[in-house]
Length: 93
Image (tube, rainbow, N blue to C red; front, side):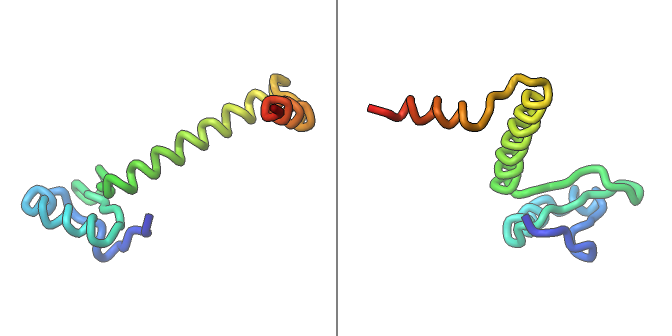
């Protein structure tokens, strides 16, 4: 995902309400997220659907990594050589 350009991608919510289609078009064309503000504070971020799906996939992978790290830290993991042997024995015909 491209980085937000402060001069183009941070807009007041009132402008968004007045020109939703234009904003959606900009997000689609630039691939950049857009930050909406209300009273000078960020209230929402709009992103392209494809970018959102990629973020969700990455988050799921990170959650699995964190879960694995917790399992290893608590002693629930198995040694690399044992895991390798299990995988290879499953592949043997």
